[in-house]
Image (cartoon, rainbow, N blue to C red; front, side, top):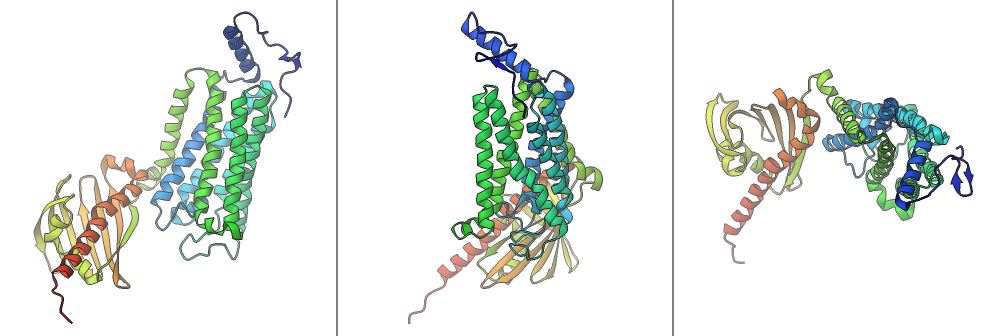
Length: 439
């Protein structure tokens, strides 16, 4: 990295001397330093710098949403890259590649903004981070830490694309901390002590947390217990790194005037929205698929019978159902009018497929849904699972990228929990009423 402006007797050449009123003099000196080491006056440089803040926001939103919606995926245990695996992995792949392109654009903006200071290595290293993210998206990772289900914790056989994925991860997990140190040195030369300290601390924190995560994955005896928290530790590392990138972008944009926050907000909203809603444009907001389950301490036949008794739904699900009325029964399926608490009267079609499976179709104003209710034996208890396929309608389609975690929460709160509470409470009441025979 090139040196900052030359110094004579403790003051950079070409800067205003500190004379007169102290506050005014210091303000003038800060303005001179900013103008001498930064060039963020043109719109193109501003737009390129905004890409840094947008990239951090986009990537974070993507892995948060995907991690919450993916069945059998545990964000505490499984890495972000595992979200790229399988048929639903295209969203995370797109997130990697688009974020990488934005970081590349940000690196160009950094070079333009820091050209007066002569900084070269900092923007170059940031650009390598962007290249690494693009490569990580292009080459999908191998299964790791037990995801997808049925795969080993550590891959026994590596694929070419899995190895390349790991190699492209180096510029982020090792290169970005080094980048933080490079900028810490630059900020120290420019007299920005707080930013020098923040950059250095970010670099050390990234190194420390990720190194701890790797020790757990390698089953080092003293750290073997944290292998189950690899996903959490990796996410902490990612948050530290992208927070530094986003704040660096905002810090440099402050020199461009008061319009910077509005520019950041507009571009961020536009970029994140376009990526989140890309599936709506390409796949017509395909049906949302999710699975939830719980264990109920009762035989499967009892749990299934309770659910099949539609006349008891108002008592079973009081938060959502006020009343029911049978409209038709052809022996195989029942058509039921349900007086829903928020939707009014809606049509449900229930079909008992087997003693362990009941299907329910539901038709509402904002969505149509099909629920497959499974009641499987789990020792002396029942594993009650709901496979949900929900098709949003009308303006509700706009919520498609955010809907899966909402669907899961509502199914747990308004179906699984009331079922478990009703069954187990009924069994306790029955046991309490049963007279005990004397020995």
